[in-house]
Image (cartoon, rainbow, N blue to C red):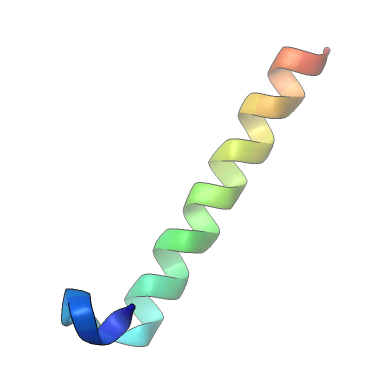
Length: 32
C-alpha cells in the first residue's frame, strides 16, 4: 500500500487511524 502510493508508512497509518476515528464518530452519532 505504502509503496503504491509512494507515501511514508507513518502517513498511511495516520490516515487510516483518522478514518477509523471518523467512522466511529459517525456510527456513534447514528446509533444514539
